[in-house]
Image 1: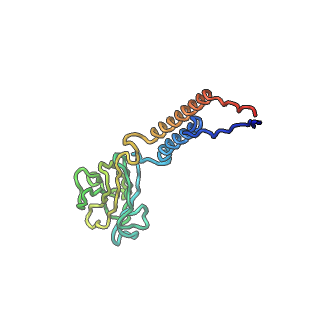
Image 2: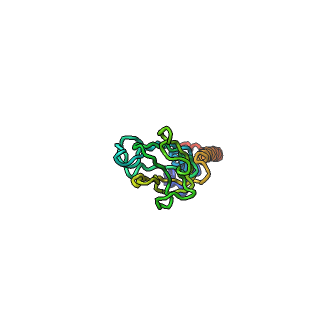
Image 3: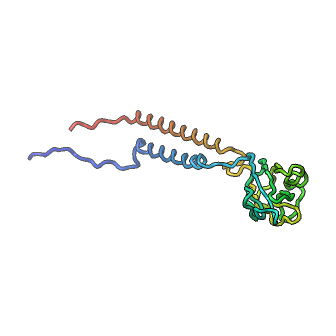
Length: 219
């Protein structure tokens, strides 16, 4: 009786996979996670306190050919006037012009009672506009101390149409961690990604040395 000898084929073992196959997956997941954190910070533009300047024109009545209210130009006034934006702690400079030959003022009406309140930024305690001598524009600066959306007005009689809105953002608005520049977080995130890449690459190389490929047996 002849025995037929041949090659015995065994089914490959199944399991969780070798470290060499899981390492690249871990690397991709780690880098993707870090990138998902850093990318929004890199693309965002955090608001920072910085000087801002607005040139405003105001006028009312028959003496104002441009109309009634405020504007960024001297040709078309409107009521309400243009919305201004600022941030707590930044210096806001206003260049105030009149189009009607009258005197006006500018102040933030924090409690919306149509009157100047002590502690509110206003120019009535120092000057009106235009300049009483030259009738030219008056430049006035202030630093907002409260965040929110408020009315700005002129307190002179007959100036009821001279109002608009100013939105003051909190100090450090747009920062992920208050008081910490987003640029710092971006740098930290990039460093973490580099460290992760080096760590995974080192681990991959060490495991490759520990598990050298064994050549298949000859047929």
